[in-house]
Length: 419
Image 1: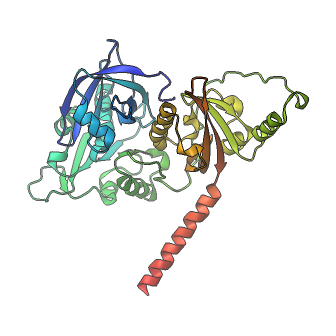
Image 2: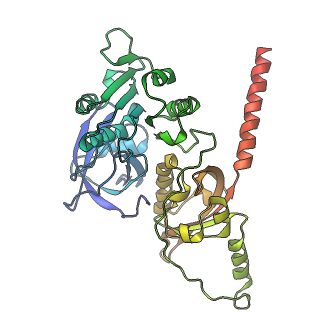
């Protein structure tokens, strides 16, 4: 679902309070007095700030659905979060869209849950804990969090209260800058390690949810995968630029469900009735060499050529009318939509001037590919962005060759250093 599929809506700041010296929570309620749309724990919102730059940012909803408000808990870092901390007050109004994202709990407690977070990555985990309590979660649930010290531990008392309500709840807290002496039960000095996960969590059947900085996720996700945890049981989200956390080729998964597409009847045209420009355009769109994908301002696909079908596996009937999420791997959707809606709002994109954007892509069969693309903005008569059209190329082979070459160079440099 497109993050903006339900459009922007005015929300008022009902409360704000600090969780730590660096993290502040804001309670947002609909300005029209209604209820916020129901979300799933772990999803995020898109905010259009009323600061002078009109910044657009995504923030995780740090509370489970309650029918009353959304809560975001923001760490002070960067222009947008600094403005929220310094300028946003109770009674102020923001434009909000959402919720969105697929970093959510499974629908039933079929397997043990292990929630592993670092720093402000705790925010979706708190929402997941609240939802687990509300659902009467009966299976094993292990909450593992790493932070600098007790002063930097957000939601400490709230998390302890929630875990006490779960019959098989457990926590382990790691303080990276705290000495071992003086720590309480289930508290540890240092950082959470893969060895700890190997010995203290059920690698064979647990679902692992990971959230934190990229380096933390890279170590945890890759380590779990190398330890034998199936990729389908490793779920992660981080707050940073898009990149592959698990670089290995993805195992095929259940095909992405798509809603019935809206039929679009072709117009009767012939070469004799078209200009040379139209004939060239028709030939390019009909080629299977590169994907050509167009979408509206909300990211709903409106055009899908044979190249797109070859690269991604979806037929036009399956793709047209769907969100671009069908070709975006789950961990990268939040960052994609943030950039997408900034482009829609500003009418500017560096990738429309020849720069190539290299990102992971998702096929219908669940496999990951590497793609590069450029975009052209479509604008209405008033000059507002009405959609985008992208030219996309599958560069998976080149990506793998480059990766192998870098690995070989690193091995040779290491061998030369040892000699």
